[in-house]
Image 1: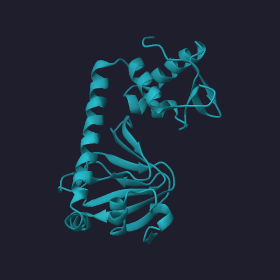
Image 2: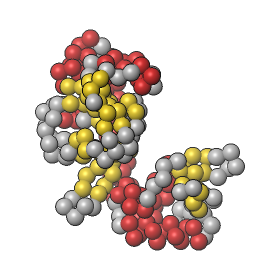
Image 3: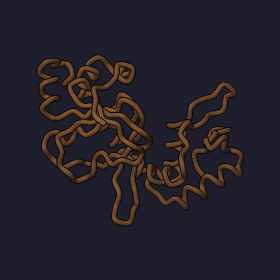
Image 4: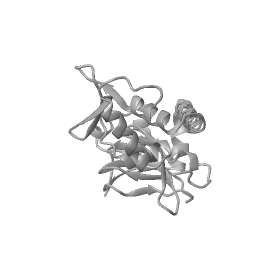
Amino acid sequence: MDAQPPRAVTENLSASLRMLAARGVSRRYRKGTLLIEEGDRGDTLFIVLSGSVKAFSSDNRDREIVYGVYGPGEYMGELSLDGGPRSASVITLEATTCAVVTRQALREHIRANPDFAFELLERLIRRVRLATHSARSMALLDVYGRVVQLLNQLAVTQLDGSRTIADRLTHREIASRVGCSREMVSRLLKDLKGGGYLDKRAGHIMLARTLPAHW
């Protein structure tokens, strides 16, 4: 379904990004819709207005590595605006609304709002830093270290002092984000639960104690 993005949906965007979204077309997607396929060529930028998406790569054996999960105010597809192939696939994790902006519309927006070029550059720099950090973790940390790093990054402190991960992560999702097997994640989480370090509440992982540096 195509339409202009409603004001209530774009209120959480920066002023410049809101103006860019207005240059595109608002489209609603069902959960599980593949917005971008790695290797394809495209000239569109997707701005998430509501819902969430996942950027990932997978092989012919359905092994998957997740680069990030993005929500409202985030955008993806900018790396292919140079005419090159898409560097990752992007799929919706729930019903999602995006503003779809063409490369020409983005150029017009930058001509009218030169400061947005710096905003776009800053976003790219942050993602490169995250990619560098992820590559460093994959190279220098063992599987346990990568799992602990991910859990600590996602955990939010609650009123009772415990830390809870808001997303209902499956063992497979954790494995795809740290680059290991689901079975390995299951074993590690089972051991940590047995040691009293974590538990589950209504499907959410709860960190009851500080996770040990080594296991």
